Length: 189
Image 1 (tube, one colour):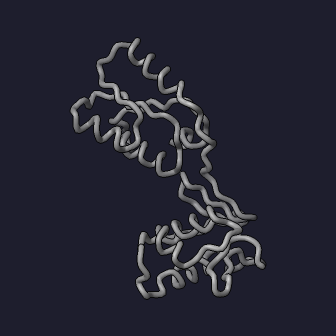
Image 2 (cartoon, rainbow, N blue to C red):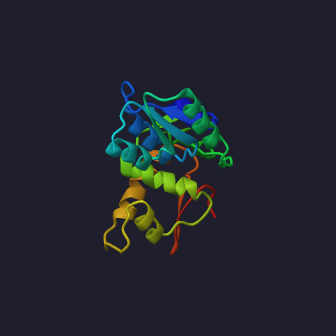
Image 3 (cartoon, rainbow, N blue to C red):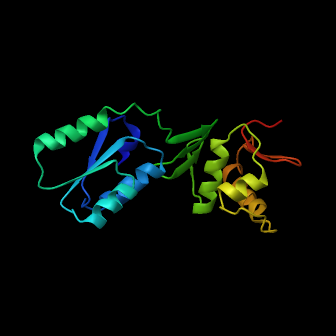
């Protein structure tokens, strides 16, 4: 899976029945990490529900075993003819802070930082918007999927916890409050 996310391929061929991680979960994980490489499911699971779930998981095509090699080759060539997608960013960095979206790890100056899932999403959003002011409303909508103000301190509480993990023990903080506006990751004003 790591190679599929880190290397550039024209087409990825995936079986639905992989040892350990099933093909659907693999493709969902890749799509969630922003990998846009064309995916062809090549599998013995050929029911309508199987094909629909494969395409809904992010597959671009679905071929059922047994198959004719000429058809497989034609499908691969058709997928490979699609225009190339922009490079996928799977590692986010701000100075010595690094987030690997595939491995789901965060390090600062080489030291591993353990984050809860919500803290990870919060930091990912902040890093994707590094250098820009991110408002409380933006965080509520994009991290918590709230499209209303819950009138709680959920944002402030999580930012405080995140600061304690990311900035404590380092000379220069990376998470800054912009008074009256929101938060910014990166350089202070």
